[in-house]
Image (cartoon, rainbow, N blue to C red):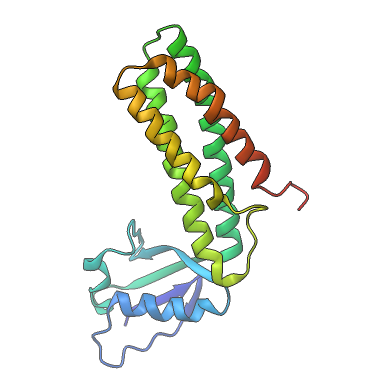
Length: 200
């Protein structure tokens, strides 16, 4: 019989049919955790960390094939605040890349394409991460942001289109002006309005 551990403590999981799958074990653990506002963030099977817990082959495997399972959990609050820190870091990096990219474009430097890609990919990650956070904590009544970041999605996506179109036509002046005079102020506005101050 496989041994199951939750945050270092052994728990009982009865496999009456002797054919329970890892997916069924995961579902049972997650049901138990829901009332405690916790999530599984790591799973170790026979001493090896599972990189992708949503893998269908893994979830359909019988637990009887393995010796031990270690589930490590985190509170929804901790997970959410970590996500907010990630969004702040993305925005900081975008802002820094904006300055570097504008300077590089104006002097005809070689790193424009790399910096432009970092900016556009960063914007996509900000939208994806904030959206996932908002949906993830919706039922827990956790206020992560001072203002809803979703109000900025449309503007950010518009800038993505403008930058991409201008870059494709080789209009470097339009791209640099858009970055410096329109996108940078928007990023600074987002940074100053959506986050709670440190003493919140």
